Amino acid sequence: MRNARHAYSLCQSDWLLHCDADEFVWTQEQLGDYLSEVDDETDCCALSVAERISAPDMQPTFLTGAFRRPFPGKKAQGRATFGKDYDLTNRGLTGHTQGKCFVRTGRDLRLSIHRPKAALADDGPTVKRIAPDTVELLHFEGLTTRHWIFKMMRMADAFANHDGMPPAPHRKRQVAALLADPAEADALHDRLKQPDYAALAELGLLQRPPFDVTQALATYFPGEAIDLTNASVDLWLSEHKQGITALMHGGQRPQP
Image (cartoon, rainbow, N blue to C red; front, side, top):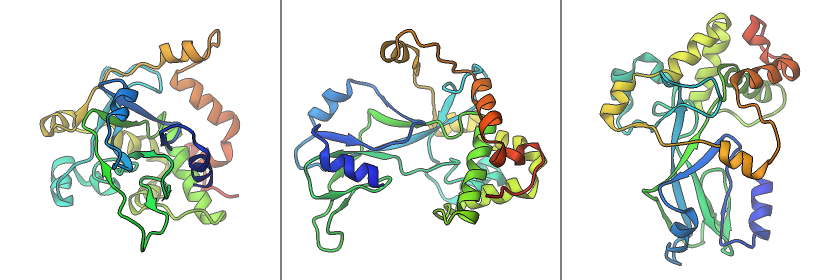
């Protein structure tokens, strides 16, 4: 979080969003128009998250698919609806459910991964936040099957061998399931990322927003040939990350 806090201290814009490269903001209106109308007393706008899942009509590119929102009910209800693999998730998502925040700059706030805190957490003022209805965070949690497995093994390697941050409980269960049966890693991914679409739709948790980055890429990277295929991601992993992705080929627990 050092980079985020440093950026916040120097930011000259009215708002700052700290998010990852696999997270995109989707909005039903111009984002600047929305933020300009937020009252001055509001410190942050907390975006809810929808996580990318495979879709039956999904193209072989890593920035396509449908999205699922977190299940709002109790864990037992989620398990009854989506099956035993629900226990490996966080309310149905393989990643986080907290979303991210647009934080108003120039205030005595301390950024954290998902929510800002008062700089003096114990004695400082309460952080006032709102949750927009028209702005959402789209999380591409695992660009491809192989990339998702790589992320899990990198997390396990960092924690076991490099004093990394302890994974969240559902992440620990995902890693344990991968290590318990490496040959079924792809199948595990598919079970978690290919849910019951009818159930999601009935619950209002299935999201299919229009999402296309090609125009933005052409605008900001004119003349660049950018390969968005799943194969391009998997090729890069096979060329540069064999030490971590050995599990996908029947290897053992990653070593430093």
